[in-house]
Length: 100
Image 1: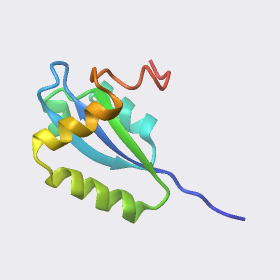
Image 2: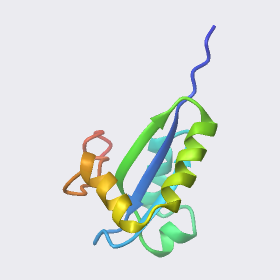
Image 3: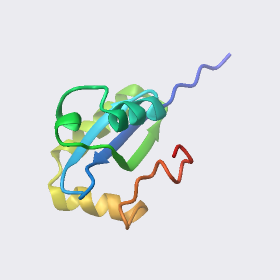
C-alpha cells in the first residue's frame, strides 16, 4: 500500500494585499480556515492575512519546507510576480477552490 502525503506551501494576504505571509501545511483547507477565522494568534492575526492568494502542492514535506524557505528569501517583487502568474487579480483562491 502506497501512502501518499500532501503538503502545501501557501501565501496569505490582507484585504488591501499589502502584506504577504508564506507558510507550509499538511491541510490547506484547515489552515485557511484558521487564518480566516483568526484562531491562530500571531503575524497573520495581527495583520489580518486571511486571503489565500497562492499555493503549491507537494508530496514530500522536505520539498515543501525547502520551497517555503526559498520563497521567504525572495524579494517582494519576485513574490508578487509568482502570485500574478496564477492569480493576476490576487483574489481569494478559496472561492476558486469552492471553500467560500
